Image 1: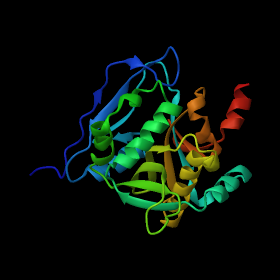
Image 2: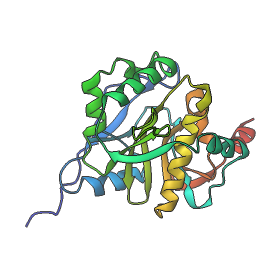
Image 3: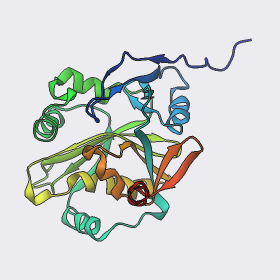
Length: 252
C-alpha cells in the first residue's frame, strides 16, 4: 500500500545578502508544491510561516537572525483608522475584479513603473515579460490576480492602477505580491487601499485572516504592515496578538 501523499522534501538555499537589513545574510528553507495535494500542503505550510513563489513554498532560515516575522490581519475584528477610511473614500470609485491568474502586457507595464519608482535597486527590476508571466501563471494552488481599474468609459475598461497576485487558502487570503501606479497624486494610498480591499474581501468570504507576509521591525520597507490592526505574529508558541508600538516602547 502506498501513502496518500509523499512527505515533502525540504532544501536550504545558499546564503546571500539580506534584502531588508544591511550587513545581514539571508538563507531560506523551501520545498516544491506539486501534485494533487499541493493546495493542502500550501495551506499547512502557510499556517507555519511559509510563503509561496510560483511552485515553491519557502520561509527564512537564517543563522543567528529571526528578524523576519510572519504577520496576518484578523479580518473579523478589523476597524479602519481615520486615515484608512479616507483612503477608502478616495478610491471608492475603482472597479475591482478578481481574474484568473493570467499575465497581461498592461499588468507588466504597470509593474515596471512601480519597480522603477519604488524599488529601483531591487532584484525584481530586471524581470522581463517571461519572468512576470511565470510569477503570475505558475501556481499549483487557487490563485487570482486582483485588478484595480478606474471607472470604465463608453464600455471600455478603465485604466489599470493596481494589481495583486493573491492565493486563497483555507483560512484566509495570502497577498503574494501587489503593485500599483506610483506617481498618481489623485490615487494616493493605493497600496493601503489594496490591503484594505483584501481585508473586506476575506471578511465577506468568511475567511478569518489576510496574510501579509513578513514584517521586519528595523526595515522601513515593512513598516506599513504594522498599520493594520489587530495584527497577529507567528512565534515559537504559535500565532499571538501583536502591537508593534507597544513592543517598541518595551524595547525602549
